[in-house]
Image (cartoon, rainbow, N blue to C red):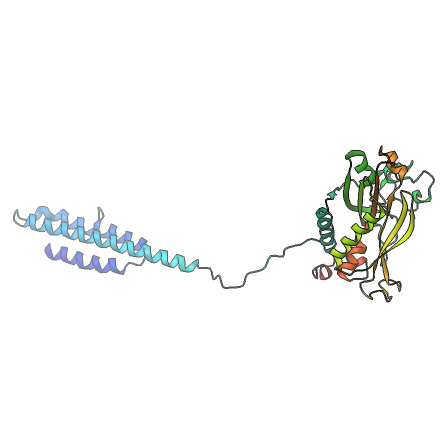
Length: 341
Ligand code: PHE
């Protein structure tokens, strides 16, 4: 029996050290130490032994059992560590492999220009107002001194919603002047950018939808000099020192006197080229001193207060900013164009 036990010890230890998985190890535990295992089988024959032999073999059997148990446990630990190592190896991520860059969108270039313009005006104490695009004709025209029957109210130029021509898509941001005067307390300094709509065919300089930025300042003693000073400062900040502007007399029903402002062409520096249609100048806005009738209509006393207003074409400003000559590039959303800015 002693030899039997020695043989079990030898074979079992060999098998345990050769086990490669915890499954194999479990099978060995059952085979040698289980209820029907080899060691148990030997112990079952203890009855046949003499009284002197019994404790000796018993002790040896216990020794073999604890040696095998310890060895199984040790091997088990080792296999677990190995398995973990392998798992880590298999799950390794090579952080040096170049990844796939997610495409991140960005603001449309024209809105980048708008942000710059807003920042400049905010720096001068103006408040940004963004509001409705669907307007009452009363605000788009009547309160701006454009009476019924005026050619600017023609169906051929304006998108109306109703037969009676009372509701429309605003043709200009100027109704924001009225909204500001009706809701704000004096003095007022606002900048109101947004979309406007006119029945125009698309070409290099026209689109049925475009953007305007309305600006307005009302206080005591405001003059045309404040208007020119403000606009010149904005143009210098936007296009750089030394950018030349020019103010020409014009007519708008809601300003008196009225003017238009041109910026010297960014492409030809005034010499004349296709971008400025040979003029050397690009018209960017209409402006003027707010008509006393308009102030009065909003409950502001024109003998005490005065103010200026302008309506700037954002697309025109963006063309100058990016030195491009076709308005359609701004609306076509071709990423090859947009990505450049
Ligand atoms: N609303 C005018 C236009 O669209 C521009 C303008 C705004 C003129 C404010 C004077 C004052 O042409």
